[in-house]
Picture 1 (tube, helix red, strand yellow):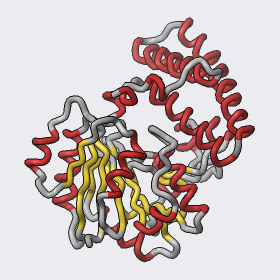
Picture 2 (cartoon, helix red, strand yellow; picture 1 turned 60 degrees about the vertical axis):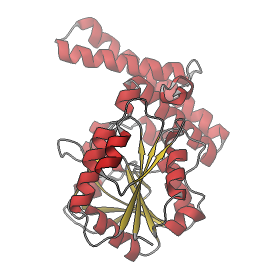
Picture 3 (cartoon, helix red, strand yellow; picture 1 turned 180 degrees about the horizontal axis):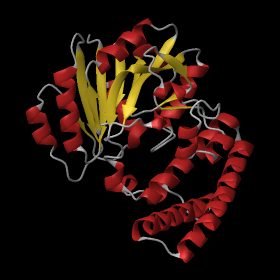
Picture 4 (cartoon, rainbow, N blue to C red; picture 1 turned 135 degrees about the vertical axis):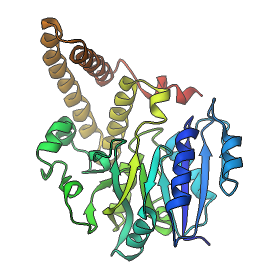
Length: 325
């Protein structure tokens, strides 16, 4: 039995995945591991070439796009490791990140899941890698500038990301882009919930782990680059992605906090969209340089899409290109 099973879900991301696999094989020492790749019916990917380059991987070719949760669960069912790392294909492992995460998972008290420090392609910190459980207020104020200005604020608590300390820190939610979990814990909480097609599965899993009496930890001493959206940028617009995230959070709120809270979340999202659209309008009318103006146009399109969704005129999942694959 290997120490670790590493599961990837691929959709048209073989170039990213190839680079990630190279980083794993070149950087990971002192850990026995297996790698399982579940392909979600990619229409334009060189999977046979990938298998030739990395003959040791297990490749599962799905005839349909199963979505993130179902595909990861399918990969898990073919795995045998004591612990499992669910890793996005658009990542690259730096140094001893995997052995360090595994060591902490096996030694920390009541540890159910761990995650490393995620970095953007330019090596800046990806602030979404640790989060609080979603609430109406922290979703309304989910603005990068606010998180960076007040990282210790109780609404998000991302201060550990900017600390020089290397000690693991307990947190509520860790990102599914690089999530390591004990096998017995994953089985005990019922795997990833397949209620979601895309987004919020990681938040749901962290909620179940917490409810079962285990802890979610952020391990700042391990680092992984997450290029971010390697698959989603190919399959959807920014508007679809944002709306899909809101839809998934609504579903999570309904599941964990009840229908009334979910209704309030939808209403507050509609109100926030109206405020954002009103704020953007004069900036567009006044006229600006090309680059700022393009950003304002993109913001208007995004918040218009969110408003249409929040009042029931649009459903992200139904129009997802990958859903129809």
